[in-house]
Image 1 (cartoon, rainbow, N blue to C red):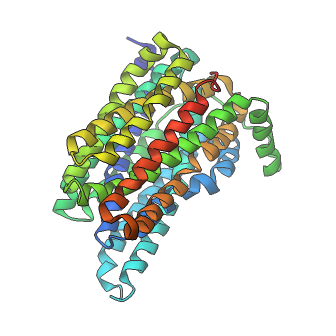
Image 2: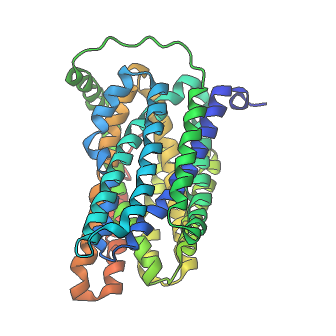
Length: 410
C-alpha cells in the first residue's frame, strides 16, 4: 500500500477535489450555455467568462496574504459554503429571468449572471490558493509529483470528463438542474475538507498586509525563474481563454453540436488531461523537468491551429485531447517545483503572485476572444470570425515556444 493510500487527510482532500470539480465541470458548460440561451453576441458571452476570471487578476495577490495568515482548511470550507450559496443565486436568477423587461432583458440578465460569476470566481481564488498551499502540509515532499498528478487527474476526470456531458443531459431535462447539482457538490466538498486532520501549525504574527505581500514579492524577485515561468504561463492562459471562450459558439454554429455534443468535446479534452495526469510523472522522470516543459511548449500551438481550420468534431476533440495532455505535463512539473522550493511560511503569498501573473491574463484573453469575433464579422463573415481567435492563439503559443525554449530552467 502506497504512502498516499494510507494518508487519510490526502484521501479526504482527493475525494473533495473530485466532487467539487464534478460541480465545476457541470457549471463550466452550463454557465456559458445559459448565456447563449439569452444572446448570440460573442462579446456579451465573453463578458461572462471575463467576470468569472477577473478575480484572479484583481484579488490573487491579496488572497495569498490572507491564506498565509489564516487557517487554510477553514478558508477552503468558508469558500465552498459561499460557492454553494452563489450557485443557489444562479438558480434563482433563472426563475426570475422571464420577468426582465423585454427591451432590457438580454443586457440585464448578462450583467446579473456576470456579477454572480465574479463572486464565484472570487471564492475560487481563495479556495484554490488555500488548497494548493495546504497540500505540502499533508503530503511528504517526495510524494508531491504523484499527489499533484493524481489531483490533476481527478480534476480532469470529474471536471471535464464526467461533468460537461452530464451538464448536457441535465440542461435537456431542465435549465436549473446542472446548477442544483453544482450546489450539492460544493456542500459535500465542504464536509470532506472539514474532516481533514492537519498537523499543528503556528500562525505567523500578523503584520501590515503590504509588508507581508512585499515579502512574497521580494522572494519572487530573488528567484527570477519563478517569475519568468509565471509570465509565460500568463501569456499561454491568455491565448487559451481567447479561444476556449469562443469554442461554445463554434460548437453550435460550425460543428452543429447540441449541449451534450459540446460536453463530449470537453470530455475528449479531459481524456488528454487524464492521460497527462497519469503519465506525466513518468514523462518527467524519463525526459527531465526542462525537456518535459519544452515538449509541452512546442505542442500548445498545434491544437488551436487544427481547431481553426477544421469543421470535424472528431478532429476538434483530438486537438483538445493533446492540448490538455500537454497542459497537464506543464502543470505537474511547475506546480511540484514551486511547492518544493518555496518556503511554507510564504507559500501562499508567492503562489498568489505566481497566479496573478499566470492566471491574471485569463479574463483579458476571454474578452479579447469575444471582441475579435465581433470586430471580424463585418470583414470576414461569421464563420471565419469565429475561427480567428484560434489562429491568434496558435500564433501566440508558437512565439512563446520559440522564446521560452532556452529560457526555462527548472
